[in-house]
Length: 206
Image (tube, rainbow, N blue to C red; front, top):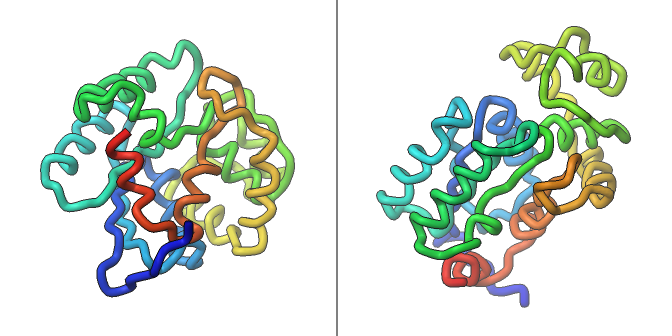
């Protein structure tokens, strides 16, 4: 049930982002006011897959947030680093499977979600060089290499209008991280687009 919105005591959410693309993407959505004003969202750039859990654990121990998410790629099979992050989060909470609700993933990479803003696409690789042609075809950006300049050019093209188009296209993806071309980010967007009272408590307790 939709609850009473208390804009004075906002729900504090932290999202540990794998890298610059994840950070810049969510930052763009925040600046577009995609998410409900009841949420105070803080983004943290882990600057690499191998740093995610250490950053997560440090933030968790500070006890400043109502809920802490991770946003990362699965990369290619066998997904060893991705599964290691999830296992460590389960151990941190002492709750088997809680990471399924706290880890937002994109298989093979976040670029799959980003490009859904601009058209239909099925990425087969997380490598930027292999995806550059598709990025240019859909966005007009030549030689995308995830540099600060290219990231700004890309994310400036994201709008409220094509956000809605992405939300429709993403329905075609599996939500099972073991499947190629999958993501559970739709559920995350469902949480943040509209205020639901105490939803974060149900995640933390179950």
